Image 1 (tube, helix red, strand yellow):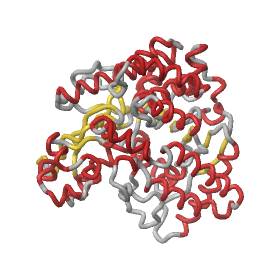
Image 2: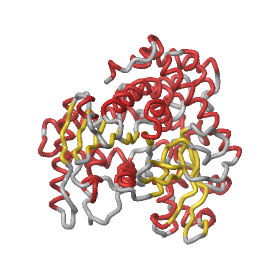
Image 3: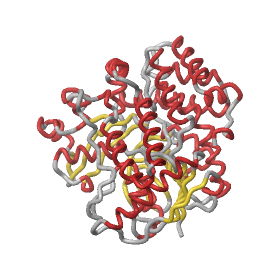
Image 4: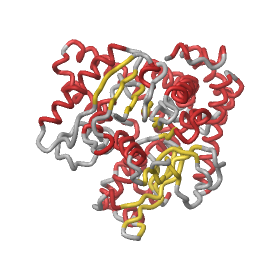
Amino acid sequence: MTKLAILGGGGFRVPLVHRALLRASGTLAGLDVVLFDPDPGRLAVIETVLAQQAEALRSAAGQGTGPAPEVSSTTDLSVALDGADFVFSAIRVGGLAGRVNDEHVALRHGVLGQETTGPGGIAYGLRTIPVAVRIAEEAARLCPGAWVINFTNPAGMITEAMRSVLGERVIGICDTPGGLYRRAAAALGIPADAVRPDYVGLNHLGWLRGLSYQGRDVLPDLLADDQALAGLEETLMFGASWLRTLGCVPNEYLFYYYFNREAISSIRAMEGTRGEFLARQQAEFYAAAAAAPDRALALWRATSDDRRARYMAEARPPGAAHDTDAAHDTGGHDEEIAGYEGVALNVMTAIAEDQEKVIILNVPGRGALSGLDGDAVVELPCAVNATGAHPLATAPPLPSQLGLMQQVKAVERFTIEAATTGSPDAALRAFALHPLVDSVSVARELVNGYIAAIPEVARVLGAGASAGAAL
């Protein structure tokens, strides 16, 4: 039986992956799924949600083509990894308390406070990379033939760090690029599976430059059509005139670069940061589900709806909810599985069954993208099959795009250096050279602020990289 280890198995979004696996067929039907998490209470709640979700899907008309995954859980990393064929990593070192500090330390110094973009992403990377490298070392020892699918943020940076141990056997995934081109196709009224996106960038820093349909690029049609463009979520965020000026559709996280002042102002004006909202919401969910286990799935669904509706609220007009695929629909079996769970399932299917698929992933460019060295992890369409993910050649990015990519890639590499060597100087370079940090003096204050606020960062920069206590 094929074994899948899910690291961060007590995490709130694990039911999405399970939902995708319930609809899997062929090699991936009836997987042996092992959930790993250091928190047994969270594991118990998520196991209950998964059991109820499996029953709900079995009861729905037309659901299921094979056996449901066999789910077990453990707080022992070695048990989870031993003999795994696939490893799905979605960990959060420092928990949501760390995320809240990522946001607030930056905001106190007048710069963007966000989980993966800007100084918050650097702080998140600093404390996560030592743990991710330790996981990679354990995977190389206990399941050397496994494919590691990394969703841990900042996904491109973490994937590049894990490559030092796992090489081509680690692949980074993100749902944002796929969601972007699917929304663009939907706005034009064409099926998403019939288009080929021209997408280029780094994780959370990319652009949809074209959309090939029946041999023709239809993205200019979208940009020229007022009505179609009005139906695109990115239009709410960036404005139609800016999309037309760019001649492409940016990844939603570029809002923080193109509208940095507005983003900071909006976040400060909100009742609380995204991290504070999630910390409060998830604490309430896990407590309620533990107290009323018979309602665990219903509670998860309601919490998930609220979570999605408020996603990136600072980037949209007041009252405009995030437009995303339903996370728990129980419609027909042929309904497409979207989101990051769909990306993960597609990658695993392509590898396990040698069924070539084109998927936008985070992998080394290997010459497919000019302007960055071949070892740099970039986000590009890839051909995925039994031999892994292979980036497809792409047209050179515009100078404005490449310059931003080069600068952020340099920041990622300084962060990796700092996290793996414990060098405060490398950390200072990472913060000071980030385009969203406008002063070396501010960068110094950020380094000191994160050391003071986040114990995991203090351990990394105070005593070198040490992952043992975090696992």
